[in-house]
Length: 202
Image: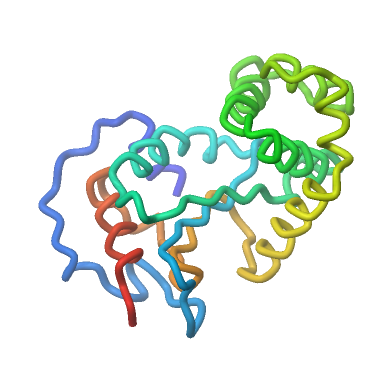
């Protein structure tokens, strides 16, 4: 997997001819549920503490541009990395989503952890991140303690448990298919595989 992400980061993958018929269950994806969601969706399980997730962000950006507009992309932060700060960062991300600044907050957190090598160890550190995203301390504090943020953070935890997520990044498509990232040979194939799975009905 490490080799795969190194290739993706470098953006030096050779273009390949991709045929949806070439995608095989057990090789490119696994079926993890009998039923699918009513609407097409891509759920990315990630952690701000995961270097592979940080490297995966540009690829997810390309995917979002290439997928049909009817496909909803959901980002689910996991608690099992970052020790005691893992759940707190999940809560912070949930609050950021409530305030509709999740993209700005995500960029700042990823940058501080993986580029600046800064530790996030306290509530004040989290408030400082919101401040950098243009959110006043009072508004950030209220959002962090709000019922909607608590509910969203709890939902992320339940999603992690429901799909038995043990490593990140992991993509679950339509609540039914898990992408086997180790099978991916190019960015083109990655996009094609995810698109194929969002349209799959059996």
